[in-house]
Each structure stands twice: as structure tokens, then as C-alpha cells.
Image 1: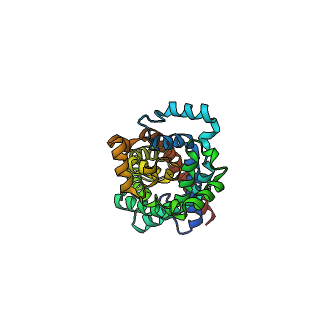
Image 2: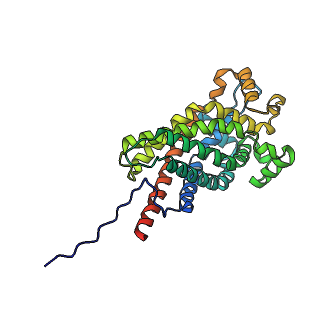
Image 3: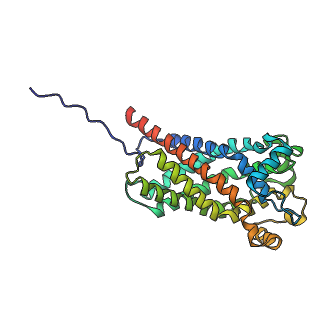
Length: 311
């Protein structure tokens, strides 16, 4: 008597996005990843901003991550370390949704989703394209965030909306995008380096490209720290441009671009000034990118498995 044949269990390729994996699901995974990434390490990011601001005096106002954290918390209150986080929460979700949707679309178009095959060009190109798209959305929110992170910002801005209104009224719409070219000069190489390192490390650790939380976490952390350290000089100039409107220094207030910021920083602090805040930047970025990639890959795996079981 013939035995009934069991229904074959449908397997799904985690890395290759199926046709029914919608843009909305991809964007939802990216939004979740973005909010998780930025909120987890926000206090250290606030310290980094304080350390990078160009000080008129020769003595730096903030030195060392632990010492600066204690200094801010003891003099301005513990919650001042989270001031401006609302801007990140509002902006990071949609910006990262655009970021990861663009990343997956470009990587898929360039053939970067094949299991066991390393595609460095596809990884770097998709990362750069994702950054250009997401930064156009996120830049105004980043300006508001850094304005609210500076010392005595409570006296100037009551809320995120109040800060946005103040900047627009006193400096115009251009103030939200004066740092955009500099931001791209930082984030495009940062993202290209990060995605290249992430794809290289994750392919080496996990050639089958199956969902593996440890791989995504470790590869994300190393890739983020590597990219953050190399792009710190552009981040210092970006901070100068985004906070210039609050400076009492006329030379800082008159800086209107990347090259002007480089000249002033080199004149004031020399080559070492370009790496101010490199430690908190790496400390912030490594766990942030680990959280971001872990959250994104988790959501991606969940949606793909959900689609495979419902189809």
C-alpha cells in the first residue's frame, strides 16, 4: 500500500527578498532599527556634541567621556543628557525607513543578495545611495537635536518645536541644510565603509546568510566603529555648522561651509582638532550600529518568515 507523501516544508531564503516582501515591511523594519539605534546611546552622543563645539578659550570645556558625563549631569541635571532626543525619535524612524528601503532596493538591483557570494561594490553603492536619500530627510532633525544638546539650551528652547521655530525665524530655512553637503561628505563614506565592512564580516562569519543574531550584532558593531573613527573629522565640522547660530564667537558664526570650517578649526586647534570627540563617537556608534543591524535583521527575518507561512 502506497504511503501518503508528506507535504514538502517550504524553505525560504532569508537574504534574498521574496516578491511578497513589501516596501512597507522593509520600511517598518528600518524605522524600528533607527529608533532603537539612536535612543540607546543618546547620552554619549550628547557628550560628543559638547566636546566637538569650538571653544573660544584655549582650554577645552569638556574632556573625557566619563568626566564630561558627570560634569553635565551634576551641573545641569541627569535628564539634560537626553535633551533633544524627541527630535531623534520623530526623525529617525522615517529616515531609517527610507534608508533601509533604498539600501535593499539598490542592493537587490545590483545582485548583492546572492547567498555565499560577496559583492563589495553592491554593498558600498547601496549604502551610499541609502545615505543620500535618508540624510535629506534627517538633516533638519539633526540640527534641532544638536542645538538642544548644547550647554544652557533650556534657556533658549522649550521644546523641539520651539527650537525649530527659533532657528527658522532667526536664521531661515537654509540653517537646517547648511550642513547637508558636509553631512554627506561624512555619511556617504561612513555608510559605504560600514556596509562594506558589515557585508564582508557577516559573509565571512555566516556564508549561508541565514538569520544569525550573533553575526549581525558583532559585524554591525565592528563595522560601525571602523567607519566612525575614519569619518570623525567631517563630524566635527558638521557639529560646528549645525551649532554656529548659538555661538558667541563671530568667526564661528560666519563659517558657511565645509572648507571654511576646516580652515578655522586648523587655525585654532591644529590637526588634532579634527578628531575631537572620536572616543565618544566610536563608543556611541559601535553599540548603536550593533543594535541597528540586529533590530533590522530581526524584523526582516520575521517579516520574511511571516510571508513564507502565509503564502
